[in-house]
Each structure stands twice: as C-alpha cells, then as structure tokens.
Image (cartoon, rainbow, N blue to C red):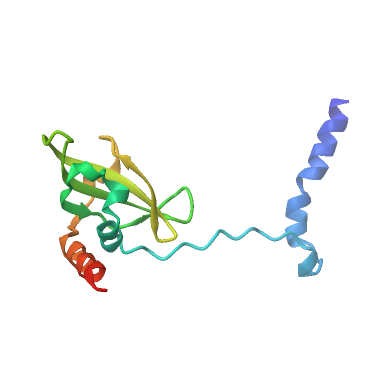
Amino acid sequence: MAALLAGAAFMLSGCGLADSHAVWPEALKVKATEPAPLETPPDVKRLVASKLDSVFTAGSQPAHVRVSTPLHDPRGTGWTACVRAELTSVIGKPLGTQTYRIFIHEGAIFDRRQVETDDNCVTETYEPVEGAVQVEAQRSSKP
C-alpha cells in the first residue's frame, strides 16, 4: 500500500513542472499569479498635516511634528511611515516625544500604533511637517 501511495505521489509531483514546459497552447497552460501593483508613494507630510487627528488624540496638542519617508508595507500594497511629535497629556503635563507608525492605504491613514523600542522607527530620519501644516491651513481657510 505504501509503495502505491509513493508511486502516485511521485507521478503527481511533476504535474506543475510538466505543465510549464508542455507544448500546449498558452491559453491552456497554468499561469503564474502576478503580484498586485504597488500604490504610488504618498506625500506623508501633507497627509499627516491634513489629518493630525488620525494620528494624535485631540487633547494631546502635537507640536514639532516630524515624519519619516514612506516604506512599502510588507503586508500588502500600502505604505507605512513613522511620525514623531511632542505631546501633552489631558491634564497638561508634557509627555515628551512620542513616536507612532502609521499605515497608509489608497492615500488615507487607516491605522496607527505607538512604536516599541525594537521598531525601526527609532533609526529613521525625520523631516518637519510645519511647512505642510501651514499650506494645509491656508487651503482650508480659502472659501
């Protein structure tokens, strides 16, 4: 019985290899699945400037907001970036610099997580968002 199963497994193991090299018309061959195309890298500065409430709570009064360059999210077709800011607690006590990883899909922030000490956000290079915040404020004030 074991010999019969081993023989069947051996015969079936070559099916995929045989199909890729067969003289069948292309329409009948098994096609490899193509990965989904990547989104274009988002403008993280502008996105964070326009959606600070997606990253920080309303009472935290974020100041000196800085962002890293976006990196492709290995879990899908979206992007991730790191955001740092000086935050204040609800009772007004300074919390110091806090860092969050944001997850971006189709041009929108859909999740954020506070980073741990082993996260690569610790070693990222950051750029200030202040200029982008001023541009967004001017856009939103125009009728």
